[in-house]
Length: 270
Image (tube, rainbow, N blue to C red; front, side, top):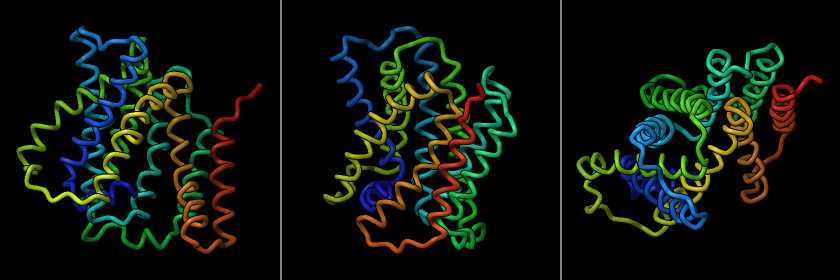
C-alpha cells in the first residue's frame, strides 16, 4: 500500500534509493546510541553489498516497477511463493532445516489459504500484457529467498550493525543510478507520497531490516519466510476494520488454513 501511495511522486529507482537512505539513517542513529560502529574490514563491506543487492536494491526495484502494472492482489499471491522457495533452498544449504512432509504440508496449506483469502479471480490477470511485471515480482521473491539463506550463513556480527551496513551499502550503490535515470530534482512531490516514503524508509526499511536480521539469526530463514503468510491476514483485518469490507465464510476458512499451515510447519516433535 505504501509503495502504491509513494509511486505517483517517486519513480521506482528514486523510491528505493530514498527509502534505503532513510532506513540507513534510522539504524545508524540507533547503532551509535548503542555504542556500536560499522566495521572497517573490506570483507564485511563485500558481504553488505551482496546482502543489499539481494535483499534490498534488486527486489525493492523489481517490486516497485512491477506494481506499476500488476494489481496488489496478484502481487500478494506472487510474493507468497517466497516461503516455498526458502523451504527448498534451506533443505540444501542450512544444516538444521531439512525439508519434510510436515513442513511442506504447512507451507502449501498456507499458500492455498493466501490464494483463497485474496481471491482466485486475481489469477485471471496472470500472464498477458503484464507478464514481465509479474516475472519481476517472482524474481524479487527468489532474491529474498537467496538473501535469507545467505544471511543465516553469515559469520557472527551484531544484527544491528549488519542491518545498518546493508542499508548503507544499498544506498551507495543505487543513488548514482537513480540520479542518472530519474533526475529526482525535477520531480513534483506531494505530501501524501512523501509521508508514505518516510514511513517506508523508517519502518519498512530501517526498523524492519533490524528485525529481519534478528529473526533469521535466531529462528532461521524458513520461520521468517512463512510469516509472510500473515501479511494478507493483516490486510484482511484492516480492510474489515477500517474500510468496511465484507466478511464471508470462505475468508474465515482461508484464515484458518493460513494459521494452521504456519502451526504445522513450525511444530517441533518432542
